[in-house]
Amino acid sequence: MRDGRCVRRDGALAGALLDMSAAVRNCVRLLGLPLEAALRLASSHPADFIRLRHVLGRLAPHSRADMVALAPDDVRVIETWVAGV
Image (cartoon, rainbow, N blue to C red):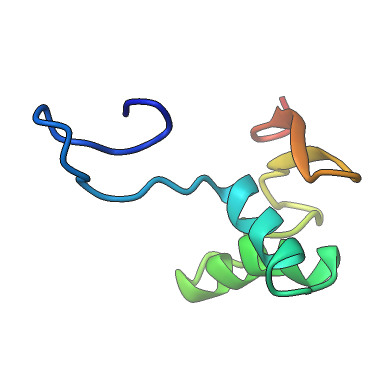
């Protein structure tokens, strides 16, 4: 990573970098999705896809309780909790 870009030693572009908060932000800003829908795309849908909905992707008894607090105005991560800690 150099200056927010994935580059090789010679400076050539080597790929892309997109963290989940930026992906959610892009869904809201660029695609016009409601925040709730974008968050489902980032949480419950991936958990369903990998067949781990019983422990991931939702807040429910016996689930892992991974949570992210987002600033509502710019969908920026404020704090995270993994397995409730």
